[in-house]
Image (cartoon, rainbow, N blue to C red; front, top):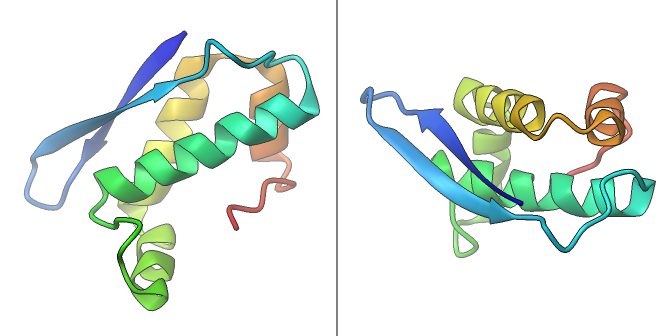
Length: 95
């Protein structure tokens, strides 16, 4: 399965980053965590950070409404109970 999570930017521009997860079994905690890490990277990218961004900038993006809204929408769109539970329960650590 593939999900493209739309993200509202401050400029009202919408970006979407495709996240592929058909290779994962989302009923398992391990694969649910793998998907959350993929969604995390996609949300960072959609909100303006890249793998080349300095750590302080990436942390600032992680605290932004853009990032949190993106993650919330993406997790809801996936609709997998194990993913939702891991994300909502605070057990997911992005780094």
